[in-house]
Every structure is written in C-alpha cells, then in structure tokens.
Image (tube, rainbow, N blue to C red; front, side, top):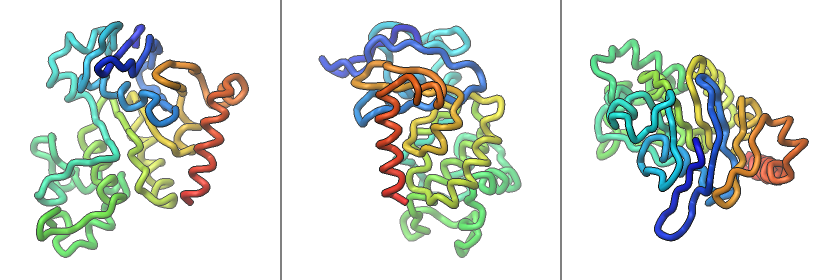
Length: 241
C-alpha cells in the first residue's frame, strides 16, 4: 500500500495508508468498527479502486492486472459466506475444475468440516439449502475454509472468518490454517487474540488512518491505541466464551 486514500461519497474511509507486506507474511489488521479494516481488503481484490495512491502486488498496480488473473490468486473468507443450493462437495470445489472427492475430503478435514459432513444423510452429496441440510454459522465458515484450502491461493484474506466457531474447533482450525499459510501471504481481520498475537505484523487503524504498525509485543510497549484495542478484544473474547 503506497499512500492509499479511499473515499465513499464525500467521506474519507482510508487516509494516506502506507505499509508493505512481504510474501508469505501473516498480517493482522485491527481497529474499532468503522476504522476501514474490510475496505483495505476490498482494495486488494478490486471490489473498489483507490482514489489516490497505489495497491501493488508483486510490484504491479492491481489496476494493471487482468481482473480474473488477480482474483484467481486470492482466497477470501468473510463472515457473510455465499453457498449454493448444491451438494456440499460442489460448494467446497467451487472454482476448482476436476477436483477429486479425495481432494475435497482432504480440504474438509483440514478445515475440521469432515466429521459434521459425514453426519448428514448423504454425506458430501447432501444438498445445501432448500429441502436440504441447514448449516450453522460455524459449519458455513468451515465449508468456506475448506474451499480456500482446496483452491490453494497465493493470497489468503480472512475477514473474521472464525467468528462463529467455538474455541475448541478454532484451536484445530488454527493449526490447519498455519499449515495452509506456509509460503502464502495472509491478511487477517479478527477479534481473536490467539490469531492477532501470532501475526508477523499488526496494522492498527483508527478513523481511516494507520496509527501503529509492528509486532504484538512491540505494539503493547509503544502504542496506547493498540493496548486499548487489545484490552477491549480481550474483554469481548472473555465475555463471548
């Protein structure tokens, strides 16, 4: 990100944001609601384009990439997950041609989804949606994680992707995610302290501005904003548990 500014109407959402993510790093983006966290990821995928500055991938402005080629390198998992009224297997394999059932099952196991899928009457062939199986929030998110494990993207964007998953399941998914992130650049938006702590770099946003950038221990020492946000996340997580 090089001096990125983004406006929505007359409102400035991101103001002169600059930071670099090295290939293979996991970067956590933290801040209050409305700070601009999700907008940052939407500029990477070109859901929106910057008003000034540049978002570069491999040194090339994302606006100069072929859009299909750009997005084919990315896997994005959000809170609001879109699933088709098709089989579980087809949903996991979306975007991957000729995926074998073995590949699909392996991805589901990595995402801690295999066991609950087998509990359905038709297993991987069970239909999702109308007159089919109804999934909980945590199950939907695990299918989305399985989809990401199967596509093996170069850039993985996780926008509060484990928010509906219980702590025990999250611990298992966390291990799988760490394996999946090896050699892969990951942008992470989360309130989960366990995920923020192990990020290679943490970007702190407030009112669309980058106010701190560093590792967890460093930011605890140097950034009162980060300490305040971290304490709030800690309280929220304790309450949620």
